[in-house]
Image (cartoon, rainbow, N blue to C red; front, side, top):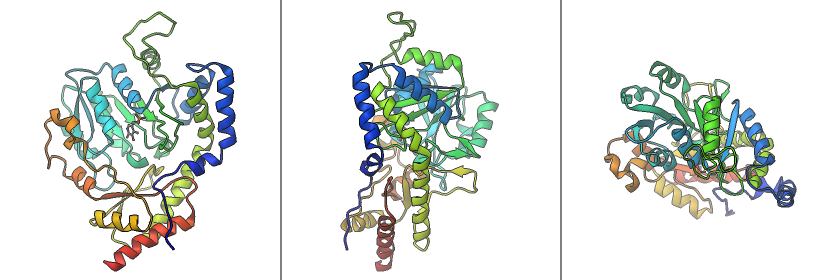
Length: 371
Ligand SMILES: *Cc1c(COP(=O)(O)O)cnc(C)c1O
């Protein structure tokens, strides 16, 4: 029988905590305090602890978290920032936004994350930071990257938007970098009911600088000491995130279980998966993506079966118009380009049933049988 399986739905996740969320929304309404209040302070404390970091600052969104991290390190015009070619566009646009030049590095063909062996040759006297992205929930191989960071005294910024709760060698992502930026866009593993983001760090001076940046350069009302902007995580979202954070470990485990089911069921098909060489990497499967030479056909076949899939990401950033000033061309990052032509992301969401996982998997198996 044909079913309908969405790529993502938040309905089942929210059903579980609906009463709590409703109370939170009403309590915030009654508190008459909507910006930079107690909810935010509490969430920042909780998220810092979750990220194994001393400090956390809630900001407007993930893009601002990246932008303010770069600004806090004094990065701007004339500076270079090394980052993966295979990422969501926000990582690269944040670098462009502060006036610096993104220096892209091709993907590792197994992990789809930045190729750790190709970073060293891109370092110059202008390199002011390396932004790593733990893409699709899988941590980067941090060991060689931390070594480079120490050797050349170049700070690491983590883009942890897709990997809240992931660990590398038991250490949580979001605690490796000088600064770590994350996003609470609703679809992320920890999502708000709107936009939101955060920065975590152990550095108190960067913390207090960003605290001012996010609020017009002021800590004390109407005393503006640096040229800041407005990027604050509001009280409603902070409260919602506190509620959801309590469930995040459990939800991440559920994602791992779903991914594991897929892996077992799809074992005898020709698809490839995002892989790591050992047990050091613990993904939180923000996205479950498969690599296939038959993407268009498979996507259409699944769509006919009522299964919605997505492509992450159909056009790699270096071939997007918004990055044309960087002067890259087709062929510059072959692994990234190949991924953008062959990755297909399958449905994975909280509350997904075994039946649904089996239906998706069986449909993929049937597609290859009929080929
Ligand atoms: C979602 C995302 C961002 C941007 O977050 P927003 O909150 O949408 O601004 C940045 N980097 C990566 C890798 C993301 O997935």
